[in-house]
Image (tube, rainbow, N blue to C red; front, side):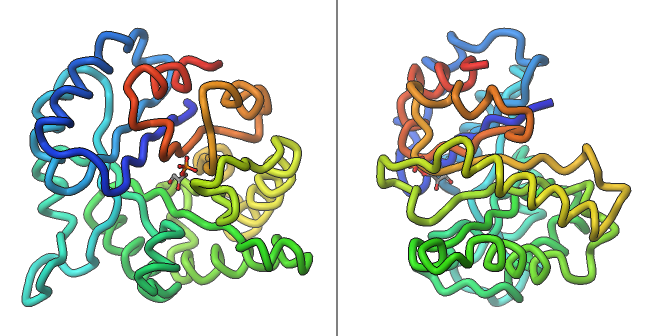
Length: 246
Ligand code: 13P
């Protein structure tokens, strides 16, 4: 089933979250026909979890730490997220990599921890503009995936991957569906190579300036098995239009 995920990033207080969810749920029908996922900031997860209970809309976090507990000031563990109803975690988002200096090794440890805890990670990968201009898109994406999945190849079927070209994030300039499809095909081949059994189980999502006006252009390609939406997910009606764009 295709997955349409909202990454709110650092937006919305608890009261704004409550308001959003009560509006958004009015648009939700046939939640069994597609997987719908909301990823609010940590402070809103608990209340969002309560409001989404029994609706079929899933809850995810935008980040996690890989240790279960301990002296890690400011971090949030997977058991904490699981208890409040998170079934997904976004791992290695471009903003984590480039603003907070998250390394491929850290991302790999987070994926290992997600698998141990039984939370499904969405691993984010994508090239910068200079990589694309240098013809390095496939190489960069391949390296990010190989390092992230190192040692856990046999569990790739329990992970989804979001292709988010850095130059398309928050810029209003999405990849063309054709360019996205080319990278998605490449990722599919790569993960088939890493683990033939994962075929058909790891979804490849596209993210980067997805809007209600362009979502269907992406979703008409079978290689695009979902979307990870930032800015356009902040308004419940706009996100609902994307959810029902196919
Ligand atoms: P935008 O949809 O705002 O470009 O953000 C994409 C993104 O980073 C989702 O994780």
